[in-house]
Image (cartoon, rainbow, N blue to C red; front, side):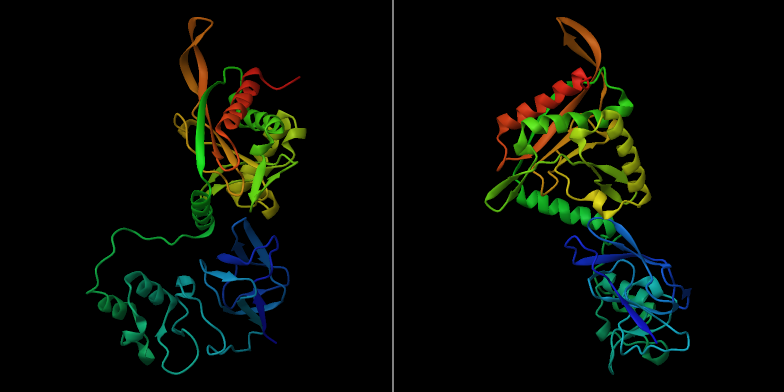
Length: 366
């Protein structure tokens, strides 16, 4: 008997997911608990196992499509079983481009076209219902679509749909920019006595200690209430091939710099490998970001909503500075803090920034 596998509830209030990558193909035999599909949420990529044993009869949702929880993703059953096209929808992009003609849905008069043809039609702005198909059985071919779109105004440049982490970043940053009236404060920091391999860990630790003194930067704005958080879970931005990911170091206030450094290495490796658990990228209370040598003099980072403040580290490099009336060369960089002005006053943000810098410059407490 054929079974329809639906997108499960992934928890944490998530209501939808993107089919990031299919790990099986139509006609492939799978066993129970075999890896079936990778689902990308706005938190992480989750590999979902098959709950059934049998043959993959039909993949219903193509890679790159975003669907709500409960949507049928794939049909698994006995190879002898057949699935009526009229009963199941077909993918809408090029995942099954070699599978032949499929219908957009059941019923007479529906356009017959392969997923890749549908994708090309969407890119060219061609309405398939108005195209006469020259292929077998009236199927619309790529040539038919391109001919129909020949009179349309061409679109410039290579186009790539927002997917996965990049889509989540776009949505998150748009919301942050729209909702948070942010201001950025910048000051120089002397990193002369900071081992560069521990730079981020030192700053993260300094932030946690300073946040205890300045609780309004470790907070949330929920409606007409400011929620002061009693934990110090700091997100650290990590650049990956798929975009920016922000894994979270938990309980920073109770960890040593060495422990924070080790945890950062582990989380960064998992982020780049795409193996972070969803719990490792959620519920941070404050964020630190640094682009290392590419950082530039300083940045004006966007607040990581729903947090109310973020700290960025500019490029650290030798610089001529004045110390005790003499010009000396010191490893110097800028610390920038963007903050939600609805919650944090400028003077308090500046005082917090100076408290962080002071801790970084004098090193961790013994």
